[in-house]
Image (tube, rainbow, N blue to C red; front, side):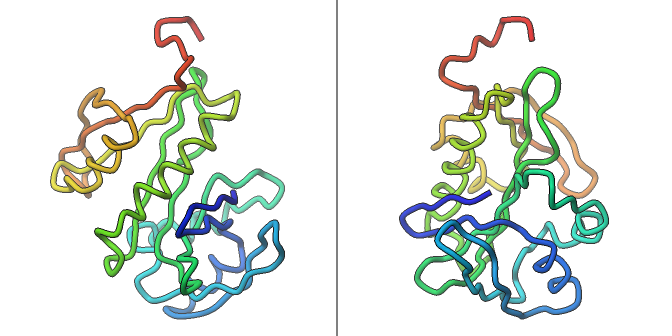
Length: 182
C-alpha cells in the first residue's frame, strides 16, 4: 500500500524491513514508492505493539499478494513514526478490520487521524470491502477519538487478553446498505 497525506507517506511494509527490525532496533531501509526508492529511518520505538507479530508476518510474507499494511513515514524527517494496516482479508460480508499504532514521541500531533483517514478511504474504495472495523481499548480514549473524527460508529464491545475491555467500531461505504444480504 502507498498513499500520501500532507505530512505523511504511507509506504509498503517490505520483507527487508521486517527482517531488519527483527535483528536491529535502529536502522535505515530503502522502500519502493511510485516516485522511486525512498530511504527511511526506522527508530527503536517503531513499530510498537505490532513487533511481536513480525516473526509470523515474515514467515507468511507473500510478495505476490497485495499488501494492506503501511509504515507511516513523517515527510519532514523521513522517519518511520507508526504502523497500520488491515488484519487479513475482507470476510464474506466485506468487513475488514484495521489496526494502527504510532511511536509515542509523535502522539497528539494528529498523525493517526491523518493516516487512518487515508487508509480507510483506500480500503472503502475497494469493491470487496463493504465496511471497515476497528477495536480500541477502553483505556485508550485517544484512539477512540481518532475513529470518531473519521466517522466510525460504536457497534459493540469485546474483550482481549492483552488489552482487556474493547470498543468495537465500524464505518461503511456511504452507499453501502447495511441490511442488504451479502
